[in-house]
Length: 115
Image (cartoon, rainbow, N blue to C red; front, top):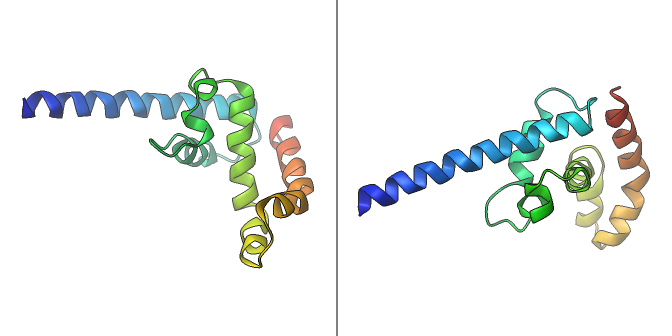
């Protein structure tokens, strides 16, 4: 039984890695201007098991462009703006998101255009 559980665990890990790679490829397809390697970072974070993140949703598992866009938007909010600092200063997440929305939209547009 232990050996079977181990094999099943290895199989699931392989399937999950395939999913992350597929999600990363979809990020690259939807956002051709995404810097090389960032699509993997985005996919690994968004698709983390048991996280409740967008990458674990049914839409994301179907590699839906809107789900990919949500994952990239979340990544940009944290990686390319002062969003986390705004939260640390006491703003609620909706206020902080509103303040960084323009910066996020500009990067999304560049990445979508392949710039």
